[in-house]
Image (cartoon, rainbow, N blue to C red; front, side, top):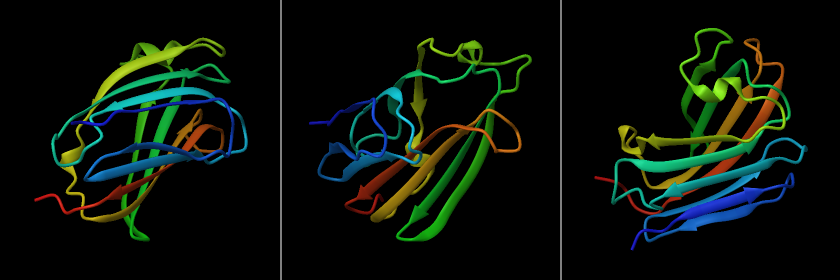
Length: 155
């Protein structure tokens, strides 16, 4: 059956095994040395059985979220595979209600991740997800380092 991965993070630098199935394993660490109040839930724990993951994010940011740029870096077996930046919150005319989250408030978002738009080959993936509160990417508010092991090629 499908696996579920769920994690709550209140400490920095600690690795956590998130999920395992016959075709996928995932784990994480934080990139920075600051403790975070963070919960993430993703179903199913599979690359083969779905093309959409359901995700829930709960996070208590350490600063107001009026501007938020997300940067994704993905490596496959040590080679750079993907780099993408997306402005989630610009400070004006924001598309997402979470863009008005204040420091200390709980940000709660549910969303789909369309994982099979990318053809995941068998191997080890390192995925760095950074959140910045400025366009110049100098003020990082969160950074997650995921390890994803795809155990078989997706055809």
